Length: 247
Ligand code: APR
Image 1 (cartoon, rainbow, N blue to C red):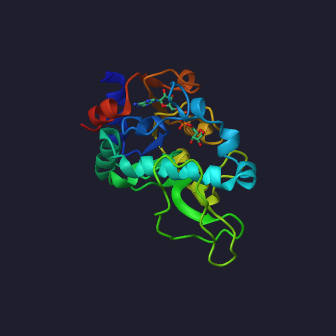
Image 2: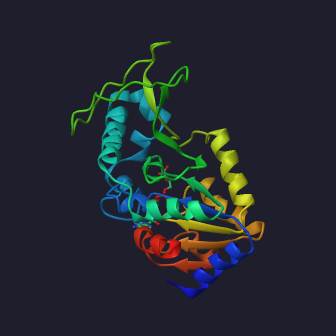
């Protein structure tokens, strides 16, 4: 473990500071959940986001979009949190820590973390596409490998039920974004774990932290758009680095 990173964390603890963790798809990679970019099996190298992750795509072919999200939900249901998720939950027991994630899976929660902000929403937070009312229905409509699944219908207005994720071109949920910027503004150290740093405004959170004097540490096996501005980078995976950090 890089000494400078251990020292930076120790200094924050000694000074009674606060850690903000920003996670991306990379933290779920070792749970078997595909990332969006960077490898041959990343989602955007296999699927076209403009045909699956936009409101226009939903209007055009809701069964195709819903089928894709049901497949992703099934992947998450079948996956387990990894040592990286668990290390963050453990760390939060011992030091003041805010967790902001771009991920729409529930692996942080299933590892025991309280997530302060899901800035891109949550796969399982279903709501009506038209009237927005939450849908608590049981998900039993998925046959493995089905490409098209007809979405469920809203009990109050009859329109289709959509996944509670932020699609390209949609605004981030106000409460999540406010919590995320608050966490970035009031931390003394930010850990940026498993994100390519390409999608704004979430990718701007490390700059928010740095502008108010926080130390920014990137944990990622690959260089990213955020690496140049990080105070320290740790070229390691989340499931290897975070348990070492927690110890
Ligand atoms: N541990 C840590 N980082 C990893 C690991 C791992 N085991 N495996 C891959 N990574 C890194 C990759 O190097 C890459 O930098 O995780 C990052 C994944 O980047 P993306 O796939 O772009 O995911 P993310 O940054 O979360 O995407 C942001 O884009 O499509 C939208 O809404 C979607 O929230 C998503 C947003």
